[in-house]
Image (tube, rainbow, N blue to C red):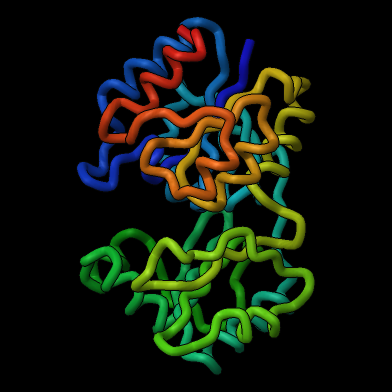
Length: 266
């Protein structure tokens, strides 16, 4: 039995159609029916992956870029920032005019500046964003926070800002691929999708020798390296492709189906 970990955005979920391609769904079910276990491994909080986490198809998930692990509906681990770190990052965001996204395992918030960034990125109205369950973050966390996204304003030197972050905060991905919205994805120190997968596999009694990972973005690099076989999508960044053992086709060109077929998993 193998354990397969899939990023969501632009790996499973097309950002052109905002659906999982039919070829990918067919392959996932074939793999599942061959006795393998499937997991979502996302930078999102678990609250924002539930619409895709069909419990009949997926055995569990890694969310918050490795901060949380779930298996058959049960929480296995939960790594969060200290309240002091969240407040410190929030203060830096206010001072620099940066947009801040904040998420726990169950809820999401945005600063006022973060809301403006999200409106521009997504094309959604403020009411549509509120309808998604997202609320305004005022600087004091209402519950333990697992991940933050820090979006830099125009003209601000990111490296200078990042040097002000607490040492217990990890920059697990520089959001350089968003040229119009540069910034960084933050996790508690030492946490990544790679550490999350290792922790989950150990807790369920699996072997890392039987793991596969599929991703496209810089925060997928650690999991591609951690798993026995790491696959980059054809639409992945160059850094992700260099970290992978195998590069499949673009998500829009049946990349997941072709990779799973290539590895003989169904």
